[in-house]
Amino acid sequence: KSLTIVGGGPIGLEMAVQAVNAGLQVTVLERGSTVAANVREWGHVELFSPYSLNVSAQGIAVLKEVGAPIPDANFFASGAAYAKEYLD
Image (tube, rainbow, N blue to C red; front, side):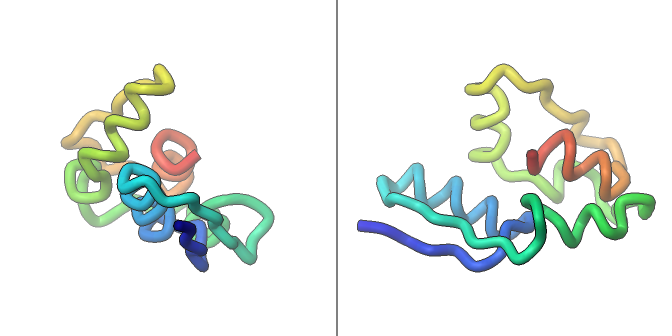
């Protein structure tokens, strides 16, 4: 089975991780030139909540799987940092 997700922002990417973990073949469609294109547009803005409220356990598992650093759960990232450290 397959799933197409419209939007490569935080919610779309989290949904993609969930769907892949459920055994689906996933295609993510993003209007921007890269994933999280909209987040990057306000990259200079600090998030209103820490990483602990903006990441999922499955997303953290993917970071560990690929050997990426795990963000500090209490850190309030900028949009740019959030996109680079978690969504890329």
